[in-house]
Image (cartoon, rainbow, N blue to C red):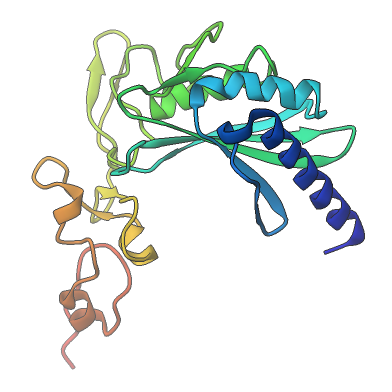
Length: 235
């Protein structure tokens, strides 16, 4: 790590500690991973207040991105992640907060950074998390009236059929061996990666393709590769 990066990291850590000192138990102790500093906010209802202070008093004048994570099977289910940057001090800081599926809502930060407008709309469109107080919370990729949230873990990668007469429709995508669905958690990355899981007939947790089966091992000689199993060629 270069001296400049070390300095930026130390500054970001200092700003994170100041944020924690201001809000005490509401903001976690900073966590460092690969030179990046992250703090967690225990109450999502206070996120706009915390972001306003980070911009006003700590110089984080640019909202780089907002993203969301579906921790399907956990409670709270959703996590919203804010990537902050300060043009004056050149430091990055990540804020994370969690939202339950029952609530699926938290305050907008579009009043703090205008760039949050479309970022929050995309999260609403893809994940179904609402941002209270947003000036124009509409879908931004899918059409109004589309009944699903495509980036949720329980949404098949092949899609779901839907239809709005005179507006639009969707059909399942032709995925060979699919539809593929990811599962949050799992004992390892192999168990979490996309596999065939038919939502209409069985829950993801009991899918026969959760782990690579003996049939793949026997047919291919190795336990890798999703999709249909091919028989060994006879010599």
